[in-house]
Image 1 (tube, one colour):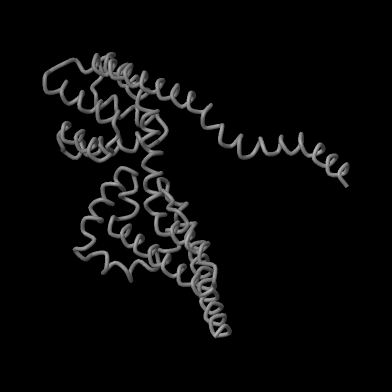
Image 2 (cartoon, rainbow, N blue to C red):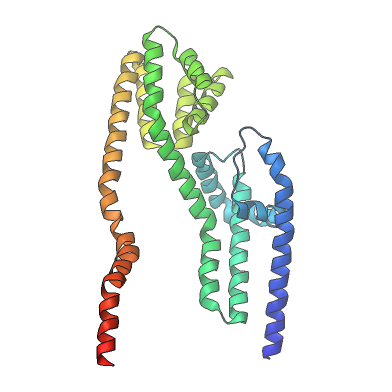
Length: 290
């Protein structure tokens, strides 16, 4: 029975290695096409390696069982800024592929006798799309929070100098380097140019990004436009408020760093120091007892 299990394990391993090599070659062949796009957002390598299998799982992802998951992933992809890069249906398909990969790894671990290691890797495979999406959203929201006060200050100076809000926003977007906040503002500006009302475009921006500071600023701008409040004064107040929040967040992270550094110090530094200080004493004591 052992030779049969060894043969099956070797065959499955060889097949997986061959498929991974073929997918790696295809991925390397497509890198030039992605780099040629100016605003292309690269997906993780594991996602690109799984793309050829999407046509096989799309019919399964289109079933009503996954309808709620497709809607949820659509909202999350909009928050992460990848809604134009990968559709929500394909994201659900990638989730299914990664779950299948996790099951295959568990099967290989059961045949090879290394169940614990394969179980850990399988769990990482199964939850990788969710972890990547959450990390991307968090990183994007942090970038928006950092850039928002500067954009509000520039808008305040432009509006108080007598310029219209849209013309000021257009000039700022042309002069600033494109970042997550610039991408969302550019998309909103283009929607307004196509004929959408300003308040509707701003509400769509708030609903799409779902960043707390940006949502508060947009709600204040909408209320100011509805009640006829001076937009320049409002932008100045919002800029000071968001800058204060950014400073408070920086102070909080600085205070937490002294606590977070304890774990690497205890795990990495203290054992080495203890070994250097106590090692010679222990060796001399052993020699005396000998």
